[in-house]
Length: 268
Image 1 (cartoon, rainbow, N blue to C red):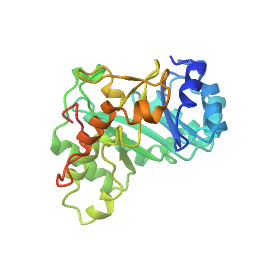
Image 2: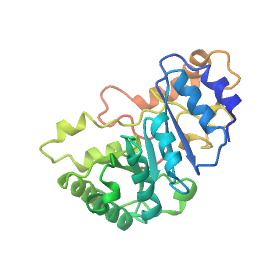
Image 3: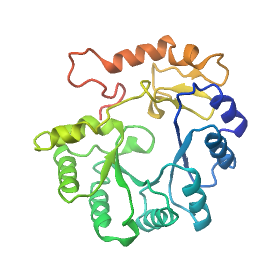
Image 4: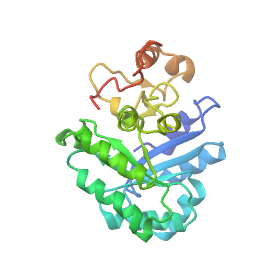
């Protein structure tokens, strides 16, 4: 866990253009300094957002999240645990509550059921969206299988045709655009799709204070973390570090490439 002291030191190094921080805490009690971090962020004009697993959420905690967070995502493992958490958060007045759902062959039927529940379960009546997360062969995902393209395309078509609000991580953007390429409203939807922005206008900083382009880049061969905690100037030492610049240039690609900003690490 990152301590509050470490958080403040890193936060204070950030340039004033920072607007949001996304915290992945999983368990509500994983980090006792969480509330101090969120309060500090708000006091300095930065909105905290977070992802939880829904376990152990109570009305009081939901109300605190609604007051201080811009958005909360609930990871979808168990229907009741997830849906009850969504209901508590939306009842507390939080406008942007999402469900994070992993897209893989192993979770395809579960995902299909989730989309159906969005239409029928009253606990999800004020849900903002189901956010589709692409499988990366890392951690627990290393034992899972990619979803076949026709199945993914079918899920996207079903959601759009039925008016089910969906979103997706930037890793999924190229596959989503491919899934909707024949739709009449393609151009209208395309402007709302954001492909990979790691190292472009977002940064991942781990609990030890090291920067990586994104969380999945951490620990990958050939990708070196950059010490933010002990740097003198974030822009000079990290953001314009030759390692970051090289990553950024490779990700953007040439201006003539149609499919730039696709993942440089994993086959999505």
